Image (cartoon, rainbow, N blue to C red; front, side, top):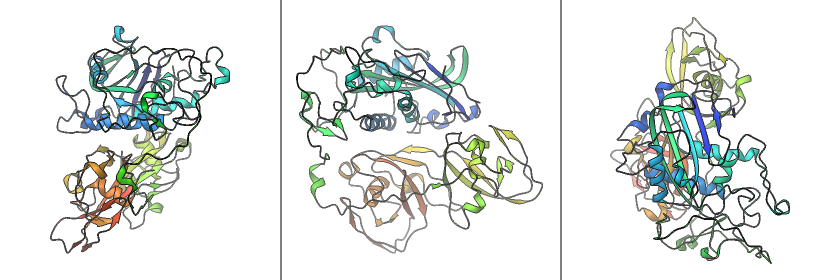
Length: 506
């Protein structure tokens, strides 16, 4: 049984991988009523609940999971010489869906477990994107020591100093190049004798399977220097990659085997070759490259007071460091907090973040007549029988959008200023869309958010990624320019609409 600080407040999270000792996290659970309302909303794309006759997982969730897997696989240390680019497999997705709908907290079905790898995750309480579990699987790397070739004679040792590392090893198993996942909301799910009223159950199936005892998860060496011949020497973001011009989802062949043959001894190691960035043909054109690392989210210390941090400016989103539970400063109030309260302390008290830190949103709510004291989530707040300006804290929502999505569609500028979700843009919006971009630095809200973010240098076209958006009042003039392969439009004296800015998430 493994206790971590990942989820000290606000919910419960479990992770299981095949061929592992299962791990379980049972923190102080609160906010059960806040159980993923967006996921249960059939009209919402982000955590959309899918019936069995339709997709097992939403397109946005699928892309989030796949992109994060490939990102993490490409950054392993020591570097991998044979790490393969992972693609989505609809058959694995369907098998994951069938198992997710059983709502059984165990691996299965039994007849498939010799043919696939499988990682499981479940949680209730705080709203979490599916990538939370993927990142948690990878984070087991802190307990894993890579077995170098000189240690592998004849078999590689399994070096794991924690209760379990095989979520991580399956995720980075070099030859596991196909994945399919499903998400299901399970009511009254039996989790090792405990009944969870509403559990979000994530099942990810992998093929070919990993976690073969006596083998290292990948070969150590120069990235892409030991790729299988079928990739034709292709390399992308440190991964063996075959650019065949088709959608990178895997369609199964008539006959298929998932058996992993032992590797024959090699008389000579492949010669490392120089690696160059993978560029689309049109990337070779002058792009007037611009990179912006300006963030909307402000980093604060554990005891930073809102009153000291934000005077007369629009400051709504903050990032707290880890370890604030023992040094959170002064917190005044419950639910509504005095402006002299610590930002991170208030977020801990409200269960928005835990001792690992994280992001939060602040909303000013005007004057309150009194503030009540209470002890919640390890934080003791003070009371105050005196009128003062107050604020509330909330989590930072995340929304996956398309290349065409505009700010005007879901987050228009209004007074008082509202919070906009953190957005995730897909890859290749430079080429997959011709949606308008109006302006430079400040963009008209009829512009594509993702293409504006590429234009501003906040995200890169080949990877997509997260960004923050701040709606603002309209501008009298929007200046066009050519940046990062996108030519934005100019606009004089618009008759309607508002504006926005885009910010990096680092």
